[in-house]
Length: 249
Image (cartoon, rainbow, N blue to C red; front, side, top):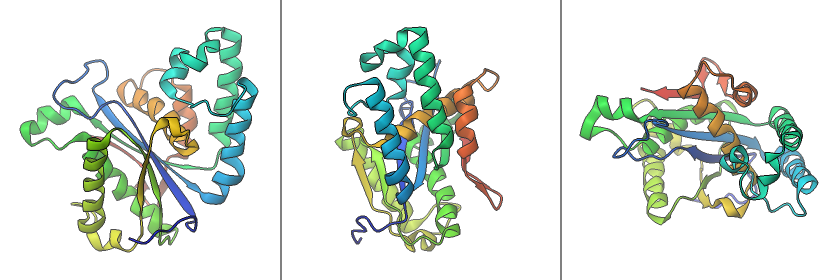
């Protein structure tokens, strides 16, 4: 596979919410969700990265703080100042405004692990692999609709073994296709896959992370008020009858 370097028009970023294990399922969070954002490279460089840096430098002395959804919700670590209600209101208001105006397209694939295991038993597919298939089946429509020949994908690293498993599943999809999408459609596009950890401070992964948890909350408790979801749902891909939203089963 060729190195597309900085030539692609778009970049995609993966991040997940929940764990993918089927052995021990958290009854309070029986879900695995994969959030993918796709951004135009010029928008990423000119708008998203500078705006996030300005936000960080407003609240911290450097831009190296990682916008991790869980730490923000729990006001942990560098987000301890959010324990003060006025600080939380101001920060969350500014962050919400950015999530609303940033130009990105969102794809969400979720697996209800308890129902998946109950239905398929020992034949149940790994939830991450399943969510990845659902995501790529929808992402290929975006690729074809925009006539892209290349789309680099940056995924959050989870560990050497986990990353190898994901890489194997990803390249199987890209060469063989899925039950719904033929392999020759995937073969027409170059999709180099790279892994980066949260401490690498990749803006795109942080945006995917900020989208993931509100979407997971909506899947689990759709009746609850969820302002963050109401913002990011406006970014979910929808074109030509294809929805960038999949919940299984």
